Structure formats: structure tokens, C-alpha cells
Length: 346
Image (tube, rainbow, N blue to C red; front, side, top):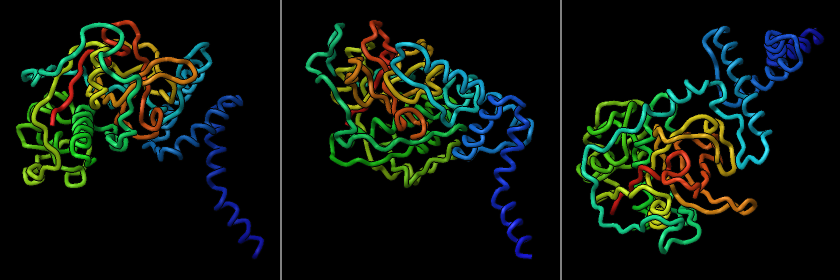
């Protein structure tokens, strides 16, 4: 009887191992397939992923395998200034990833350019009176990385909130996490989870008289009816915004004063970016909004970079951040980062 109980205990404890072995066998007879299935099983557990059918699971495994082959082939390339790695997007094709996490292009502002009294240098590789390096995290002016999730293309709202959070801290000494959901639900100039623009977000915050905290109006990753009562409880206010002239020198000058909202083309290798100074292939078909929170130069390579705060959680990139190559010799910068720029005014 004791022997039977021991055997039952062994089967219960090792059921996951038996399942893993069966799944590995289903992946194919060659050792590489079995090893890849083992990695896929670990990835599933790490990211709490599950699929509705066995067929969908097999399909996702094939996508995962192709992505891992691409990541490893890219990382073997000579003179690469960045690395790719397995992350929460590893079972998505590039098309699926862009459909979930990027926007179908960036809309233009439906308003005027705000208060453009700020003075920017024209041309040149370096901004006038800008320090050699800036990182607003060191000044306590950047809230922790947030996650927009796969069901709401709301990067514009995260950037609107992030830049207002930072300038509020710089001006008042108080760092408060603000509500992206309020912007998604209440801003009539933008499309909630479908399409939006940080400039229009600033315009609405000014008209509303401010923005509340995300604890008061928490993120739901979908558009709901606007809660007017919550939207009336202002935790931060802005009086205007500035749209910065295009150019990396102008962006540097602006970031020296505060974090800046920007648009980029997000795709290709950036899906799996894990570290280093990104210098991969990308264009200027803007489909994602990010916050530029600083700039500097890599100590080992000397490469100049922008420090970018993203809204995909800490398991992407350098704990949610991206270093993108700076001074690439084009007016728009890497991935068009210096083409569409703005910041709020307190």
C-alpha cells in the first residue's frame, strides 16, 4: 500500500514532466525540435501563456521557433550594436505584433501648434547650451514603466501622461502617476484604443483643466464611458504645449529641459530588442508614440543614443527602456525619432 501511494505521488509531482515529454515528441523527431519545444514550454510558463486548442498551440510553437531562429541569426551578425532576445512577443508574427501594439500611422494635430515661443537652434550636430548627457530618471522625474497591453493601441495616452508627469515633477517637486484611462475615455479629439496623438492629448488636458491620477481612474485597456466625476479631480495641470521643430539638435535642446513626446516607426527588430544601442533597419512611417527622457553615449563603443521610455512593461528592452542611436546624419534621426516632437508647459 505504501509503495502504491509513493508511485501515485511520483506521477502527480511529475505530471508536468510527462506532459512536456509528450509535447516535445509531438514537435518532431529531431533533437533540435525537441530542444526548441523545451524552450517553448519554459517560455509558456514564464509568460503564463495558454492556447484554446492544440492546433493553435502548434501554430504558435512554429511562430516561436521562427522568431528564435531570427533572433539568434541577428545576434550572430558582426559589429551589431544591440542584441535581440526572447520576450513576451515571441509567439507573435511581425504583422500580429504591429496590429496589437502599434497604430495605423500617426494622425496629425487638429489644433494649432500651441505656444511656440521656445527658442531652438537651427541645424548643427549639437544643441546650443545643452549638456553632454541627460537622464531624467536620475532626477526622479520619470514614473515606473507601464504596460498598455495587447488589446489597446494607447501609446499616445501613455506618452501624454508621461510627459505631464515629468514636467509636473520638475516644476513642483511632486511625482504623481497620471491616468491614461481618462485620456482614452474622455478625450474627444482622439480614438481611444484605435488612434491618437499626444498633441491632441495636451489640447484636451488643457481644456479639461487637468488630469487625475491613475489610482483614481485606473487603466482598463479598453475604451469606456467617460467618468466626468473622476476627470474633474485634477492631480496635474498644464497651460500649453510646444511643438518642437524637426531635427536631432532641436530634440536634444528640448530634452535638456524636460522629457519630450515623439513618434517613431516601430517594427522589425524592435519587437525583440533586449539591450544595447539600437541601430537596425527602420523608416519613418510613424506608428508608435514614445517618450524621450534623456540622451548620452555608450561607455564602451562611444555611440551616442537617445533614452526612450516605452509602454510595453519591463520584460521588453532594457527593463522597459530603449537606447536608440543618436546623430545618425539624417534630419529625422533613427526611425524618425526627431520628426514629430512636442512637450507640455506648466
